[in-house]
Length: 264
Image 1 (cartoon, rainbow, N blue to C red):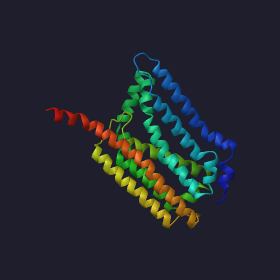
Image 2 (cartoon, helix red, strand yellow):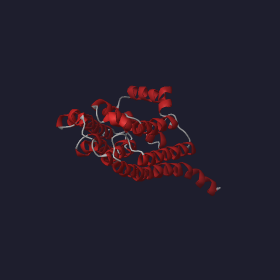
Image 3 (cartoon, rainbow, N blue to C red):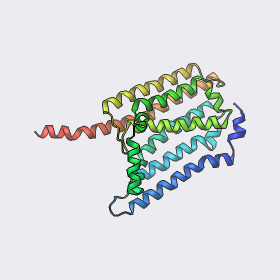
Image 4 (cartoon, helix red, strand yellow):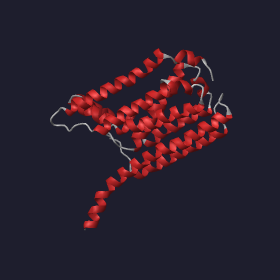
């Protein structure tokens, strides 16, 4: 699929412009972690959160700039790998790096209180609801791969950029709505989140099977089948980690009560 997008949206300068926000986020995160760790009343920021943030940004950056991103314009399999990196793996790693917690412990108290009030507001409660996040995440993918939007994103730089931004933010929002790492004012039970997660995974699997039979416009059948398998099996691998995290949190939350009951 050689397209105008290749001429409009790829190359050193566009890649540099695309990667620049990720480089800024990387620098800001490391600065905030080091700065806040130097305060006597706070513990040092955990090393594994640094790693999650760096690798997560690397995954997201590789999906929209560089060799993989350029190949994704013509190769549906490469596009699916980029989709897994940008929409699933990067959000999972970035959520695990607890950026909101880091922000709250870095900014002044008055600013932290304002952020807390914003997180407790009703618009945030609607967007961050597990069902809303699931619809934004999976619903967006169904629209992308079952309409002409997939072809449009490869012919218009800004449409492609909007799709990438939505894919990343929706993936982050959904992951944050299922596993609670940061401050989460609007909480839902483990059973509720587990049900939403199962239904969302089912929606992802069904979509990959649909793509296997009916690839998006402009994608050859054999390429569509291979890309669908990457989406199906690659998505399962990442989902396993999400399931493990949810089950671990569930077990940790329930364990004290179980121990108390046994001691009686």
